[in-house]
Amino acid sequence: MGLSSFFKNLFGSAKETAGELADKAETTFEQAKEAAAPYLEKAEIFAEETFEKAKETATPYLEKAENFTEETLDKVKETAAPIINKIEDFSGHAKESVAETSDKAENSLENAAETVKEKAETTVDKVEDLASEAKTTATETAEKVSSFAEDSNEEAKETINKIEEDAD
Image (cartoon, rainbow, N blue to C red):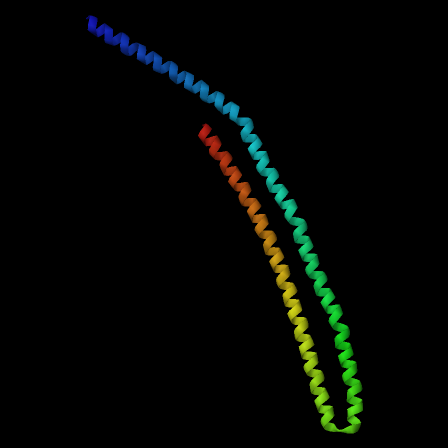
């Protein structure tokens, strides 16, 4: 009987000790969870602020790029228009002068004027294409920055969720 009561006392006290440790662990866990809550809130606020700052930072650059592209296109059109008009005027005057001299010269000037017009129009088209590409590139860059900001925000939220899950 002495041996059985010894084991009962031994395992009985081990049960009690294990129960006490479990209670202490639960209390400590709750305290850790409460202590971590402000940090989780700060992390979430930081992530939201970072996202907003990224959006705020990217927006002016996008607007500047769009404005620059539009201004450049307008300047090119303004610059090319007088040149085309001068070419037309010049070819008209030359045409009159040469018409008196020969029909062959007239045909040559018409061809030259048309060639110059075509090349000028081609140049304007190329400039418009380049301006369009610049605008597209600026828009894509802004979208990438916005996407990066959103990804950063998502990663921050995932980190917060992991911390909360680990805390639970």
